[in-house]
Length: 227
Image (cartoon, rainbow, N blue to C red; front, side, top):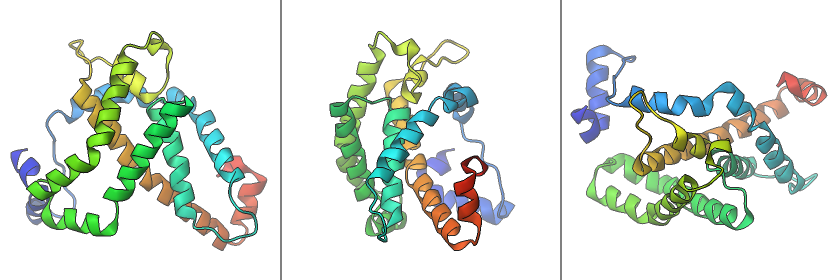
């Protein structure tokens, strides 16, 4: 565990050399965190977010130019970020929604630029320069997330809300312990990074494949449920 935290890339190389391409690492506290997270991603609860996804997609499509080529990936990213802000963070009101979306979009754009990613990969996440970079870039986002967490903890309708943040605030382990603010911040950022660009890329490639596969686009248009 200490080796993985201190030098994750070196640790992965050592494991691969010893065990081969496929190996299992049992990370301390992982199961504890997973048990707390699972209820928020139960099938029935995820189904409630379908309406948010449909609304975000319809709103985005209404603004796409007709009959003109577009760069699909940024449009797909806008949809996935909209869904995350509403379904994960539970922010719907106009002012808070726009503020959080702008902050998240800004930090994702800056930290996922190719030159930045190469620098991070080359130096390693624990390099003092990289740590300082993350602290500087994430300062405004962290402040907003901690403000949102505190506000949501005090919300009188917390138990009735179905966004992921609210469900995590209500989660308890077998000892009755809940999730700390620091843990919540980390979980929210993990969901953001894991669900934003990866989902947008998958959507963009799905459109690319549909456009280049004879008959596929027509079948999906005729029966959307089949997709």
